[in-house]
Picture 1 (cartoon, rainbow, N blue to C red):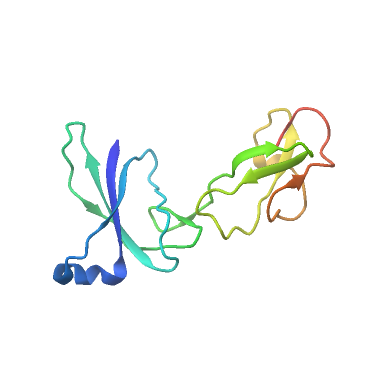
Picture 2: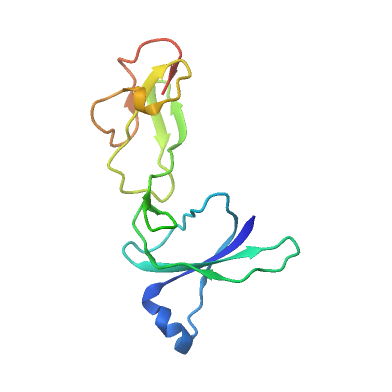
Length: 154
């Protein structure tokens, strides 16, 4: 399903009737989940969003207005106002020095760190995998010395 999404700061919402303050268009998106990340918001400022369905005929459904949600620098906020985990790192790779490297997800600037784990073969249970280091890793690259040889899932 496609939806048109717009947002605006709550601070001036009461002025709209008088000043005609416009909504800012985020765009038309395919929403598979009930969450959406809007980048470039001011941290600590409350925003409201409105969403309407874009029908196959090109017509629009009615606008549905959200409850106000405070923007958080680098945090993702779900539909109920709960903070969501950050998106996964991008472009994960092992460089020619044998170090694990990755790119930060866009819009995420205040992470406490990364937890990197490993397990034999194609094991997929993160919670049972062994940590590469005891502490959180602040930033890449991460030397992979000490990880047993062979096929590993990191």
